[in-house]
Image (tube, rainbow, N blue to C red; front, side, top):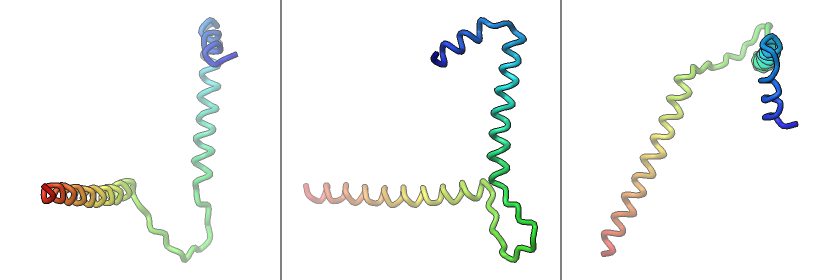
Length: 90
């Protein structure tokens, strides 16, 4: 039975049954999200002498944009050099 068949079968069921399925699927997905979220925590409660550098999402995006800008600028410079070579060859 394919997923489309299951969805069509679910559409034919009464409203209370559809709500139960919706509630169960939301609980399952939320459990998965919370489980993944908890596995990413660092549960070190002792005196940790190592200081970790914290980044905000905007710092990470900003650093990525600087790298992208540098890559594009070097690519533009290479393209300009190629056009100059083509013009000099004429």
